Image 1 (cartoon, helix red, strand yellow):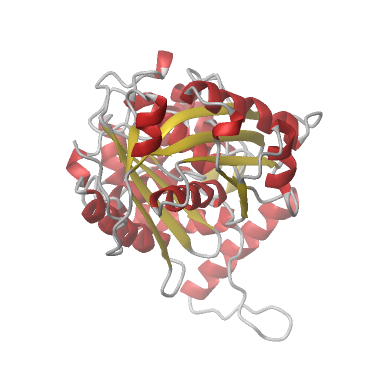
Image 2: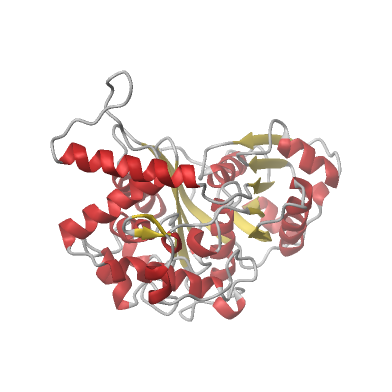
Length: 400
């Protein structure tokens, strides 16, 4: 298939492909610095692509905790070559947007070879105060629904701000509206942990049972701790090239970027609606529809998100997400594997690396290099989806 040269915004660009990927395992590594985490990911991506550091013309670094000039400080350790350096912070989607920036720089003709790096250190547990805030927010939401005005000091209505509460409400609403069961929601966690058990880069590498998900410590009803992703540290990097660069370096089996679509909310906090809009634009720009997507890596900081977002991505009808998971369609050997990496739930969610780690998984799966967790159907296309606090969403489509 000839590479696409459209952004989806009516602008002609050069074709761009991912040609290498590297990761540092996600987890809790208090003793490691940002440099310690980033260097193995960068070197792995360079080795995978078969290029040297001196060949890189632009570097993009996505992070949320590293402070100003983190990208420059990390990249300089490999040699001060005069490359263009840009840092990106966009909450959970920081890595995804660092990738998008690198893609745009290559696609626009500014350079032929770029690196997108995501790195963060977020080693902490969910605090009791964070969970309590979620419980209070959920109670306020229920009181509001019952017509009882609950207010804070100053008389302002109390609005949920904790992600735990937000997604607990989402789970309850989906269950009430569509008859989705708690077993279906919990099955997402079971599936993701089974996939992560085969992933050497995953934070959690142990399968869990449905009973263990149900019996785990409750966060905010109906979500236990095994319905929630872990915080952690990690790094991920990918190399992007233009067609000219691919010809120059003799790259085989490049994975082409078919679309990279960014959307933000027009009002409210409906991430599912924003996802639906971004996906629709991505399918149009890429020429690859939802029925042709071979695999998906999506934002699943909480289990209910997979169920909601597979609907928003058009992989099933509204209200059918729970049944899709229950049927096995989203398993590694299913019709449309979702989060073969283990997802945020089990691979982990260090923020900065997360979106780039998704792209690395798609790169390896499409090239048949995913080892034990290789999707049996050997997909030829994949979709990466991330949302970020503040109402942003990015959907990116790839194919051989």
